[in-house]
Length: 483
Image 1 (cartoon, rainbow, N blue to C red):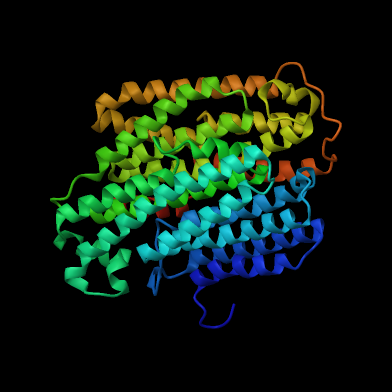
Image 2 (image 1 turned 90 degrees about the vertical axis):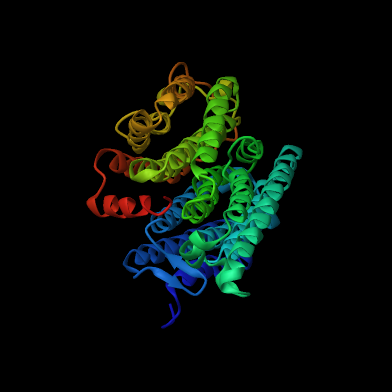
């Protein structure tokens, strides 16, 4: 990294430079290895961010809220690239599609970093839009009618969401303009947060509603959620881990930044009830929809809607404990859900189908994969001792202490969803094994699947059972930012 080049911008431009390099690699394996190398370099740089002094630097801002999300993003990016080394062969991409996949993946990673690190709300909007367009390309890369339909739905619904978010960003800028005049400072999250108490509360209210609905669409919150199951079920297997583990977090992070600004004005509308309402709707719909899914990847996409709803609900309650539960839930969900998608994706390639009826008895036919997937599903179901159990327990405790009426709908949603996932675990991992496809991937690809799964599950276990003291202090500081 050149002297004087800001580390946050290095995290943005490294994947984009890597994308240019990947354009020039025509063969499958060298391209996959280069994709891993670029992702590994990005992860190392993200670790260096832990020693960054923090604060605002130009259009970027580093604080306790975005720091763990950035490191997590590059970790998931690296493990997804490793998984892709084995998975790409079974995708049977031609040269053009292979290049499109790798280039779009690294463009997405750079945009993801920018979305999390941007201090400027306009730059954040642009970054999330770039990440969305890259996701559309990856989802559509197979070129089949279902893939094109899923990509089109992703483009249209998220396009509506991003348009609403743009309007909200403009309104937020107008709220600050009387105090800062024209220029970039009117879009700075740091500046907006500092002067929010002096802004017109009606203008702030209008901005927050549009930002919540707009970015909430990207976060997979009900009612504009229907793009998510299609995108995760029809795109390449690796995109499922990326969408659930990364894009949803970036969108919810943008909502939290807006919540912190509006919540700083005593006369503005309270953002919490809106988030609670969206969270309950997402949890309730997804929990019961899980029982009707017969496609394994679509099933876990609906689970992502449920978990984003739980995180939104936690942030809607607000306060140190609930915000900590929300942050821990975001981290735990990204780790566990990515692990599950790696396992389900590899199983679908082995069986030649992602239908639940065609995948069964994995623990008997492929013990390493079957038991790893079973533990991953247990983690996603919120069973102890994984991170999602800890976050859901904190959420229930806070709800009982501050909003007793939430206990019944929250408990019904959690139990219904957990039962559906345990039922799915039995269907996929236990019972009589189903036959493998004649075109099953070679045996060595299981190593590129199991390595990322066990790493993610180990980290999810550490977050749930023994949260390291430095990370606990970082999350405590982050929990005070959204308000």
